[in-house]
Image (tube, rainbow, N blue to C red; front, side, top):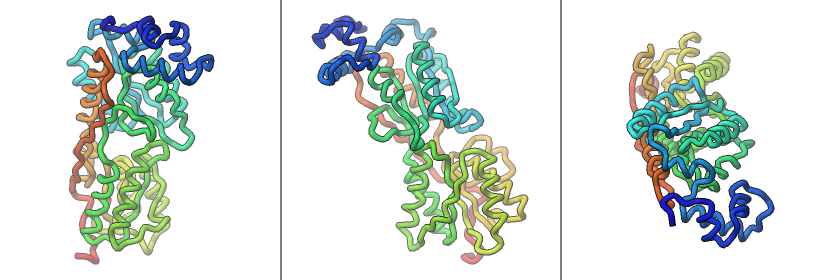
Length: 345
């Protein structure tokens, strides 16, 4: 068997024609299910890469590329992830190509299809995961044996993954506030197109369920992922509440938290004297912001670097490698925007 298997190798080992292998690769309905499964098993066994992707391994490293598919081009979270990915990728001779879906799964499909058509060596993807999302393009990458790494998991798909435990990280943030004496805590929730939104909300729920406190429906406030989302949600929520205000707010991410901080400042609500605010992500630019935000640190540059390390191994493998899942460490970073509530002091 040649070091870099061909479609002829797949056809010979599977006992079918090259046309049949091609039909399986292109997901045509002219192939029976048993034959399809057999061909896919051989593709995985040989680590065969359809079309030009197989020949990528023969190209000089300087001619290869990695596509990074992010969700929001204005979110500095992804800037840090890409910076970590680029640093290691350039050492290995890859060029990084970045495209943003802006939370649209249709855009994600188009971007993935375009990048694979241009024969990127591998992909790093933060998938759009709302209830309407069609993830067939990601499952298609798996079927076609295109190397990729996810930065958010997809339920039901065994794939390379680099992430933190968002449930436990969110739980830790809420637990800290409860331990400080806060009993009226509100969560400003993230966008519907992210599994991180679901996981971080689950962490909030678990923190409440493990305490003597109860989480009411009106304590979960839909916000989003951007500065303006946090600002608008803050103005709407706190602008109409004179009494019964929460003493703490946990936010989906740092951008929402900073938008909320702006709204509270305009409304004359003091932080942390009146309301404690907790973010999530620990964005680097916050070190230069007017408010020193308490938050959950996510090792974003390491996340990008680890994703490229995994891709590089799978791109250069001459046989199928097992799925790699890396869970990085988070930590609470406590700064000036959280404190014990006045009544608990």
